[in-house]
Length: 534
Image (cartoon, rainbow, N blue to C red):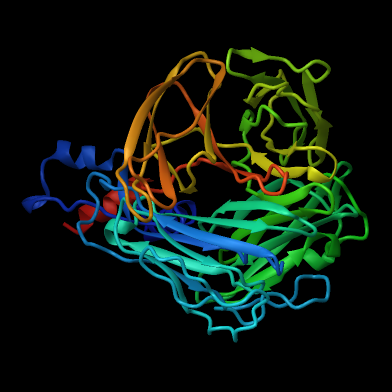
């Protein structure tokens, strides 16, 4: 059957949205068009390496006592069929946005960071941004070779959002991590984020507009035309009406931060935020700062699904609050289970959770870990409906509390990467939620300042969470990257915890390990395009 031009373009556009603007490397055929069998095989769905990838990092902090590290990394070894071209990978400062929604200036005219490249840490001037900001489009960090992280640092309170792209051999799996230590004030703590690919929809259960909490959503537009975005808030009683969240324009190559509490006069502790692009696409990051419990970035939840896996609850967590939202037209009934190191249990008093359609449900699970690190499993209980979910996890007590977030995470696909790891500070949580064990290979890269990579294979028993420190690179100096690949077995989900205690505060951040966009599945329409170009 012939494909129309419209369907072909639509398939390509869908790939770009899902793959973070990834462009595919499609193998060319031989002479004469090949046999019928060859043409049929070419049309079968296939995963092919990307030729270009994109990452968007929001402005890290407005604190005068914040220190931010950027780490960029592409795994060594490449992907079968990937471009042999050496390639480039660079992060550039974005243009500033309008206002944050509270009447204060946003990141102003950005590019505040001075240049950074190779593996050198770039100390970007005095705190508070006393140096004049550089123009938008200034280079902040570039990666020169696969297998070795590149880093840059800044202590500026007006550090900009970053727009990055990688091509050639540096594109498959290119990952950027942003890690900020805020020493004091509201949101004091460790704020970590894997910079996101652009998309048209993001779900953030676990947001808040309550007093004592400041949640900013940062919208960054990587393209040369403006994007228009709607911010939808859903509380425990349904949609929270807010005209101020509709039709927000994000300028080309620019960023706009919005304070969620400015969108409504109804303070709510538990809110789900939906970022939906009417036109264009954006990267979206949500930063939460609490007056008493510290702060962190809240990663977007995996796409709505009937089941959800939230990996990586620390064993010493003093509290865990679960927030779930059902975006469809049906209610959801969920079984709640905790997968620890030795098996799966049901938390007493929290066996099930009913989530009404279009409404946010929240439950305080207390110290659900009870000294054993693990993961939360949500499965459909009779009535099945798609949900998004996140956990707010707290460690420490009194004025030494610190908070991080764990969203629902998709199962590992081909490969997942987290770029910024420190000796004795990084921990992986690997959970096999089904009835089949999984084998997982973990590779630690060379350090940003030297060393040799190391790898180890682990077996995750069914219904359990395996918590391990990644293998230490021999002679490693500086930070290193960790790549996780499923070797065999059933589904496995993963997250990484980075802990950097400071002044008695158990500072930590948790990043979900999703696919690192090394390759994407090519639809049949794209296969047809390759055949036409022969």
